[in-house]
Image 1: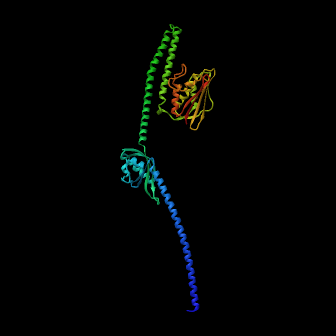
Image 2: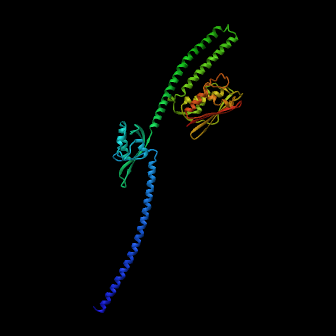
Image 3: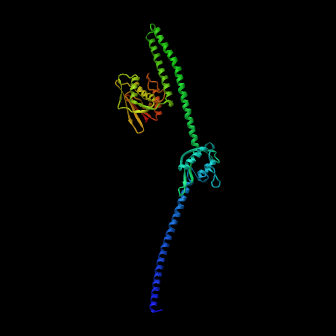
Length: 405
């Protein structure tokens, strides 16, 4: 080998050593980077695992402490998991005891349950499912269920979950309440029917007595002195008051008959006009509307009774030379607030509640039966309203009442 060849070989070896050294340096650097990345990944994984464990523990705590029952099942209806509330409700301990939901469905609700399950598969959820279920230790229970489908990462349904609430006691209370309402409605109908019969039976002898009094006056007017004629007049007055009283009782008993209530647009302005043409209003008394009154959705007959009784009451107790009955209202968000104000004799505060009770009236006013304001209160309650008053004796009274829109 010549000197030239040897030099060439030496230079090649030198380049190879340098290249190998550079490669070793690069490999060492990359190894350090890889180690650092590995350590970072390890730390991140540990943090992720710690966070996952923490969240799993939190979720398990929530799951175990749900007030309502939680049920997890596969698409075949096999129950996979129950929380403590579900175990308490159904009486089973899954997975120690295999249970399929079909086993829990009340036989008469089976078709409804299958339709609801198909709806769950098709739409992914259902809510407000109410039916009966069999339980291991508590017999048949009424339940309310909200359920949803569980899907995997490929959006494929793999199971279902539901929140189950035991509403058996609530259902029983609702049924009792419904029965009480039905019994009350029946009782009201019987009472109204009885009141009609009694009023008819009472009016017949009153008319007979009234006819006899008229005959006596006509037949013996030449014999009767002034005292006798006055007694005849008092008898007729008493008979008239009795008839008003009977009509008042009949009206009072019929107010609660909600079944016959109509729902129509009622113009209160027209109601007031009809009242002015119906009842006797002395010339010295004026009815004034402060503004145009509203149109209310309700039963015209009941609303007319309401306004007529308050206005009649005001007319009966106005003692001033110039009587004023003033009607106004305010349009509130959910209701109308009415005020009917008069300048009558006024009412002492101790009688504010008393006057709304049946057969209670102030003084000995011959035109008052003590029923009108009790009818008013009942009608207002039907329309979810309230009534109250403000009054100054010898100055006047304001009746306030609300009617729901």
